[in-house]
Image (cartoon, rainbow, N blue to C red; front, side, top):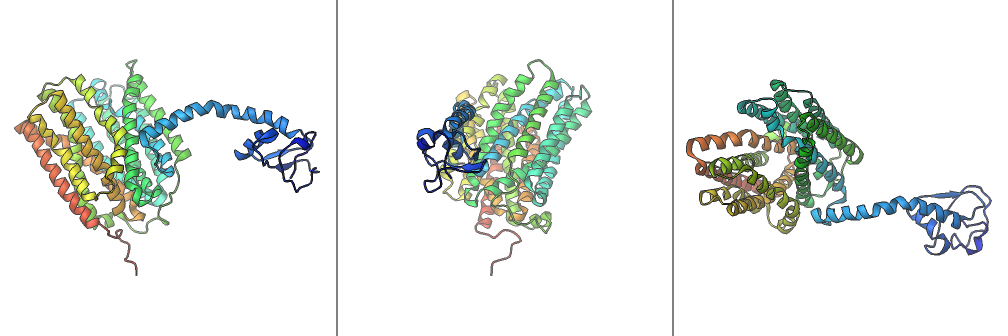
Amino acid sequence: MQCSGPDQDHCQCGDPEAPRMVSHSSLPFWFDDMTGPCAAPKRLHNAGILLRIPFPVNYCAKLGFVVSELEQPKARWEAPSRAFARFFRLIWGDDVDAALRPVLLVSVCGSVAFSAIWTFVGIWAIKALGASGSELGVAFLAAALGSMVAGYAGGALSDRIGRKPVIMVGFGIEAAFLISLAGVGDRTLLGLALVAVGSSFGSVGSGASQAMVADLVPPERHERAYAAMRVGNNLGVTIGPPLGGLLLLGGQWSHLFLGAGILLSGVIGLAARFLPRRGAYSPEEPPTRGSFGVIRNDFPFLLFFLSGGLAFLVYIAYETLLPISLVSGHGLAPSTWGFLVIVNPIAVTFFQLRLTRRVERYPAAPRLVLAMLLMGWPFLLLSVSSSIPVVVVLILIFVLGEMLWVPTSQAIVAGLAPPDLRGAYMGAFGSTSAVGFALGPLLGLSVRSAAGDAAMWSTFGLISVVAAITGAVACRFALGRRPVGVPEAA
């Protein structure tokens, strides 16, 4: 079709073979030239806006004004968009799968909300509720055991009804739990019960989240995708505690709980808007068999589950026992540990993906063995010296092993899992963190009370060796195997 109106002879647009005039009052127009009088409407057309303009109108002149008005908001957003793009490239680089980015957004925001509150839960329980150390320990143990069941159950449910609704339900339960804590006051048992129950059911979406990653990216990119997710989680953990501190500036615990709950409610909105219902690599049909029976008979997975549980014992030792040892056994000031502990999330945020890209061409089993040894044995450096430079070296060696271990182990589990039971497998393996959280501090403190720091760290060094051996054997069994329950091709 052809432009018409008073300036039709000067308008560089339309189909030259078409008639010069149109008789209908509302017809679509397209523009062939990005220069001259029709440049502005052509930009609108390229933006996906179909133009229908009544006859006769001086199209180019009037549309030029309309387009300039429409482009003003876009111009205002260009600078912030460029800044965000630079920040994204700095953290994640340029090769994050486009399908994974919505999951990264939801994961980072959820991690901010969770870490804003969980950093302070122990302090709140003791200071505001008057809970004893043993009461708090029982609540954490109950939370860990409940998380094991909820993580597996949520993953298995996501295999049947989809990942997205299960993830949203998990966020919703946690948001309701956080908001309910604002009304606890000083009722100790009620507060501790809410901590145990809320944190347990809040784990419902964890297995579904991990399975969604494998649904969205091809198998050869699983490890890099899980590394990207871990970077996002650590970025959230870096942002969350300072945000929680800001909410506590007035000394009101209710402000912290309400603020974190509202933030998590916003994450539910993001999940509803951006998370996909299915991925390119999702199974075609829901499972027709029970997941528990398949997992129970999957020897390589059970062996890797054991390796993961032992690895998490070592990891939780770093999280909970290292600060106790440094402060009470080596004279380190608590404030100094507060500065040292951020070395870990900062290192993960900036170097996890870079390290993963460098080492992913090597076989998984040797990487897993190296990771376990790097995580378990550096603690013995404290027997030689506990100076701040030595502690920094210890943390850096540990975080190097941690960065090798986490994405490698998650990618192995995603490969071991049958596609139709991926959520159940990821949820079951995720429960190993609860095993470590439940048993690690108890084991470590018992050994420390009986034989001292050196014996405690030697114990975790030996545990890391067993974790390395069992993980390597599981990798050997899993190498090239068919998914469990899938018959051999004819």
